[in-house]
Image 1 (cartoon, rainbow, N blue to C red):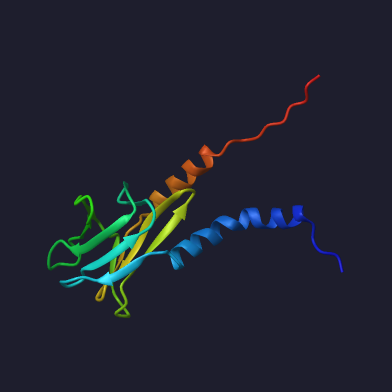
Image 2 (image 1 turned 30 degrees about the horizontal axis):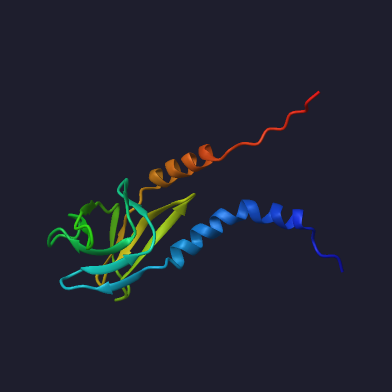
Length: 152
């Protein structure tokens, strides 16, 4: 029985690696999410820099809460170390099916996009697909292209 060559394995893995990484980051994001005081308030610790509503935020501990009683008004994400805040404008809001707060990220290249926030009561879809597509295009443009030329 012959094993596939390293080139064949590499050729298979390269085009399939990005979707796998996006899935892993989304499902297994290394974040700690806990309930904080107040309705739909959660505390989260993010171990990497991430993007929300077009703004890059540093790794750290954040408190996420509603702006008001209306869940469609949006959310405020506050960094507990720097005391800076950013408004989060959800694309969609649905009722949560479980009482388990969590956040999800989508990774494109080296950027992590906050894509979903689930609180005790609601699920907020954050990332616009156009933002992901733009980041994907930037990531592909930034890759160096290799050209070979024969010297005579």
